Image 1 (spheres, rainbow, N blue to C red):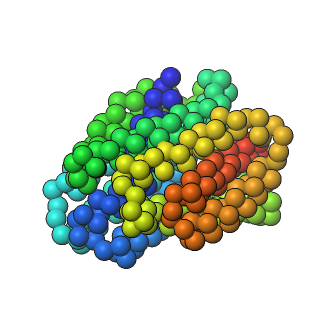
Image 2 (tube, one colour):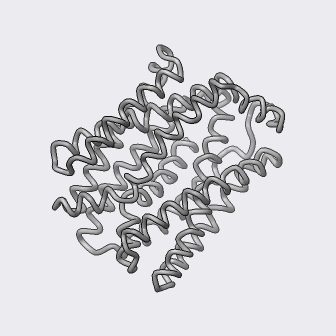
Length: 312
C-alpha cells in the first residue's frame, strides 16, 4: 500500500499545480503573459534539473532520500510563498518551488519501476490511484475557491506536502531486485537507436502540448463563463478517462506495441488541441477532456512499456 498512498499525495499536489495554481499567481498580481513566462521558465528549469537529480540518484542509489529531501525543501518554499509579496518575488519563489518538485515524479517512477516485480505491482494500476487523487483534489479545490478565494490554494498545497512527507517514508529505500548500473555508454547507445529517438520525440511532443493547456485552460474556461466548481468537474472528467486508460493499460500493451500506443495518443492530441482552440463551450469541452485518456494516459502507458521492455 505504500506506493498507492504516496501516489495519492504525489498527484494531489500535481492536481493543484496544473489546475488552479495559475489562478493563485494571477491573484498575486502576475499578468497572464507573465504567468505564461513563469510556466515556460519552469519547464526549461525541469529540462536541466531533472537529468541532474536523476544522475545523482542513479549513481548514489539514494532515490528515496533525495525524494524526501526535495519534498521537505518544497514545503519550506510554500511557506515562503505565503509570506512574500510583489510579482517579482512571487515569481522567483514559485520557480524555486517548481525546480524542487519537478524531479519528484521521475524519482517516484524510478522507485516504482525498480520494484514492480518484487512487489507484484502493475504500473497502470498504481498510476490510476494518482489519477483518482487528481479527480478528488480538483473537485475539492474548485469548491474551496468558490467558498473562499484563491488564497486557499497554498494551504491545500501545504497539507498535501505534509502528507507526502509521511507517505514517502514508507517507500522502499532500495530496489528489491538488483538493477543494472546506468552508464554513459548505455545512454549513448540508447540515443543512437532511431526507434528510441522517434518514440522519445513523439512522447515529448504529446506531453509538451499539455503545458499550454495547464497554464491557460482555467483562464479560458473562466472567460467562457464557467465557475471554478464546474472547471474542477472538467478536470475531473479528463482525469477520470485517464484512469480508465491506466487501469486497462496492461491489456493495451499486451495487444499493441509501445510505438502504436503513442501514435494513437499523438493523433488524439491533434483532435483535442484543435477542438480546444475552436471553442470553450460545454459540449466541445467535454469532448476535449474525454480525449485526455489518450493524450496523457496512452502516452505514459506506452513510454512505461517501452522502458520496461527495452531499457529498465
